[in-house]
Amino acid sequence: MDQTHVAEDPLGELLPVGILRFDAGRRVCEANARAHALLDVAPGRLLGRSVMETFLDLRIERFLEEGGGTTEVRVGAGEPRTVILRAAPTPDGGTVVVLEDVSELRRLRQIRTEFIDNLSHELRTPISTVSLLAETAAREAAADGVPERLRDRIAKIEVETGHLAQMVAEILDLARIEGGSSIVPEDDVDLARLAELSAERLRLFAERGGVQITVDADPMTPIVRGEEQRLGQVLVNLVHNAVKFSPDGGEVAIRVRAEGDGARVEVVDHGIGIKRDDRARVFERFYKADRARVRGGGTGLGLAISRHIVAAHGGTIGVESEEGRGSTFWFVLPARPPAASTPEAVAS
Image 1 (cartoon, rainbow, N blue to C red):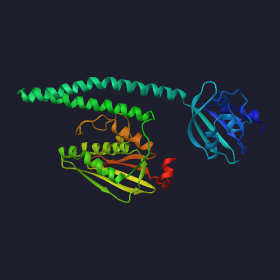
Image 2: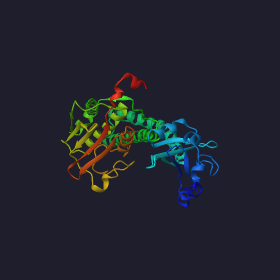
Image 3: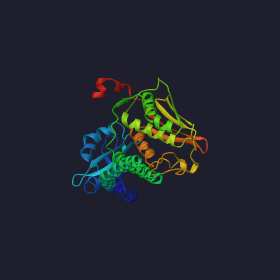
Image 4: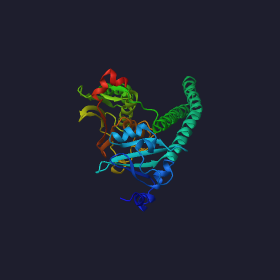
């Protein structure tokens, strides 16, 4: 095959991504112009190079030797770029590599994260001050015989200030999670025990609304590898939502079971349910399916945060619901790898 003709293939040149094809001997036999530009190599000079000569990174060579997949790397000698590298084997024993430049996306994401971080920190001080003043005013109003109407207004200020403080905290939390630097899955997590702890944390909140929380956890549920505090946050978010949408005298059930090679957690309520059109959007930021029929308000960020946390643990999350008959929110996590239970594996 004429390598020059392949390198100048119009289809390859029109694509916004870099394309490389390595033959069975792991040398470049095809490369489009975008690949040359991303790797800071003059047109036509990639042909015949080995993987190491192409990327100058031993980790990429090992990545391709292990069968490829998707990873994020830095490439280029002059002005390094962040690229998503996708690699897949070809029938002739070679490998196709696609390079997608995400440098600008990562830069904008970092700007957004820093902006939200700074804004949240700037808001925390005045919100804390207002909250403290409202709390003090409420105590003094109760002691000095202030009219009922004024006490109600002070109480509303307290409640709304609390909602605002929660929103700022959750916006900051979501920004950190989306920045990819918050979650380190390094704990051996017993989801059955975590379900009990989460139920206990929210029992008082549930009892105030006349809602009962029950836990049905199979002791044979496999241990998962994760960050226990974050997974507890997911459970608390799901149970908190279930209580909010439950009727007085209702019940919220937490179920923990083994599923395949992993563990499944379900939070079941018998509340108002979710409309069909809303189900696909409940995990979006700030989305609220029904603002009018909810106990205790909310920011609309809890489910978005939960989705990111579960995804960071290699799991999936979803919802099953029927309007007027309740909802079941669930997530599934892979079990801890057997090798991870040995001290040597944990150290590595």
